[in-house]
Image (cartoon, rainbow, N blue to C red; front, side, top):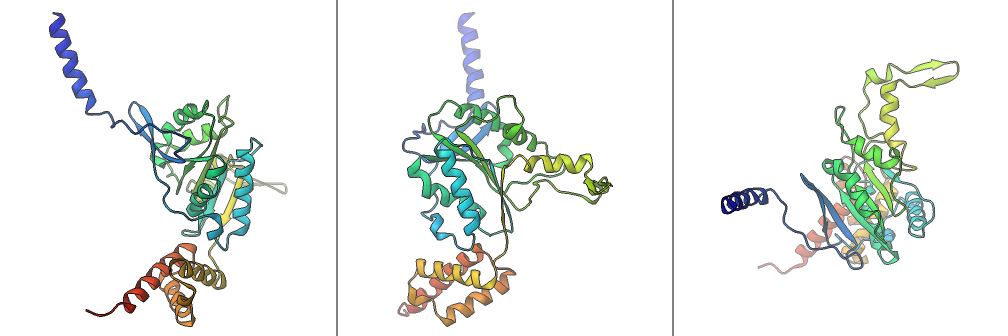
Length: 291
């Protein structure tokens, strides 16, 4: 009987094992500075990842106010001082995600550790935060391109971790998010029809209050807007010089950069980077001897 039960348990374990994620390399936070949080049916796991690039905050131009505010907030956090969760919102390609990555490259030596959580894994966020609570390091938990649909309940996990539980997030964890939407949730005309003017005061309806309440739990809001032409060209010059040399930036490159932005339908840090990649690639190919 024992042998039969053992065989059945062995078969059951073989079936369950197929649903388990592969064992990741164990994270050593004294060496690893970045990780991805991956949720699975039995909880979640941290996967150490290499830093994507070597860009630092000095490489980000045209966003000086945002850069200084986020740097000061993060340095205060690393020193154990009061700091705010941060929401970076605004135009696409304006440097929101790049700023978070550059922040890690700039402050990893001062003890910053970064964990990225996909929006679809936010339900596991409370478990991740609990796992980090007793770690000696200080972590920024980061969600990129964060937004929710009207019937999406995943935001409730984020809302709870930000400011909704009795204990709140631990002192060694901050949440940073980037989004194209300031309020993270879509706002419909019907939502705003509930807004009323009472005396001289504007009172939002319940639906609007619910949607504002999520972004309101981020203490630091940083807005990113499209570049004007002068700033866009300054960023183009920076990346063309960085990827090539100062000789690659001249009147012809400037005219090409303007055409590139016009065809893209906007000026942004992303467009400047993409132009620099295209321009330097074309120039180097043109200078090679023809076969």
